[in-house]
Image 1 (cartoon, rainbow, N blue to C red):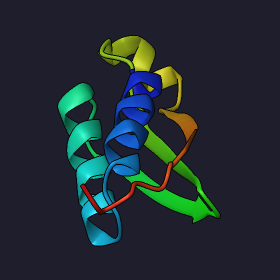
Image 2: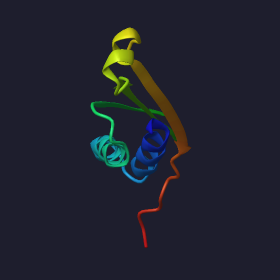
Image 3: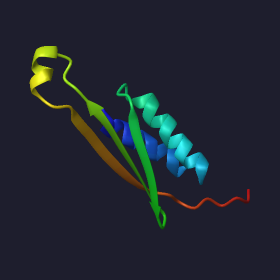
Image 4: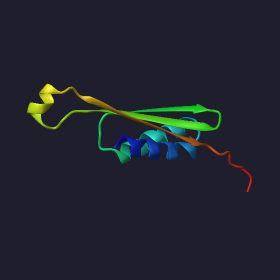
Length: 88
């Protein structure tokens, strides 16, 4: 669930820059996963963009869920952001 969200989020982020990249990553992650709330973190290092997504998940069964704690699901994906030439 969160693996696909992080993969789609980083794909969206590498084609944007600045605040637009973060907004695109948030939107792509939310569109991919039904888990709420999602925490989306975007970091860049050189030409590499990493998006980390996490969400808390609890068991949907009340009796078993009372015995077991909620689980935090985490995934991160890194992609290379190629520089694009602005001239036609």
